[in-house]
Image 1 (cartoon, one colour):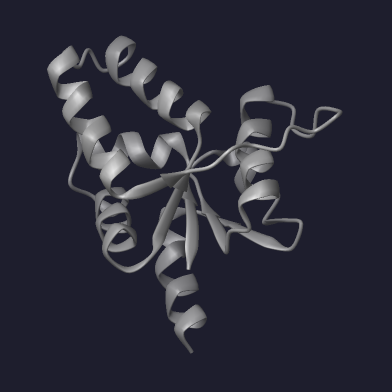
Image 2: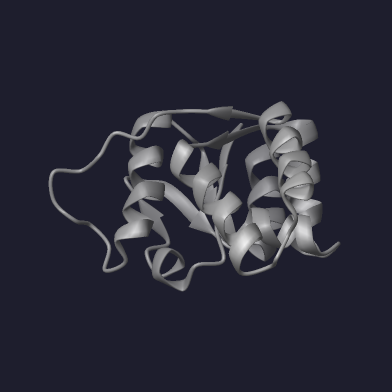
Amino acid sequence: MKIILDTNVLIAAFISRGNCHEVFEYCALNHQIILSKFIIQEFTSKLATKFKFHKKEINQALQILRSRSKIKKEKPFSQPVCRDKDDDHILALLNNAQVDAVVTGDQDLLCLKFFQEIPVISPTEFWKFEKEFKA
């Protein structure tokens, strides 16, 4: 299964050992994590500015991400889709990468529930989705 993990899920996975970390580890071992340059850049920027990670720590996190994911190109939309333009990057990636789900904590994305018939789910909902997908 191909899964997009949104930036907020990745950040939570790297700053704590909670559900997002478990989702990341599970997906890294059992699925193909799909990311984009935008997600990588946003992840790097937020770790540095918001969470004050040192460059060495960010590079280690990036090394882990790159070793456990595939970087795909977005297929940009001709018109905005979401009220938050950054969320358009996630949906544009979904649009191009033929994924099975998007895992996010972003309420603007979660309220969609589906985009182009692809589930948009929270990290908590991931486990139910995983169980149903295997069935």
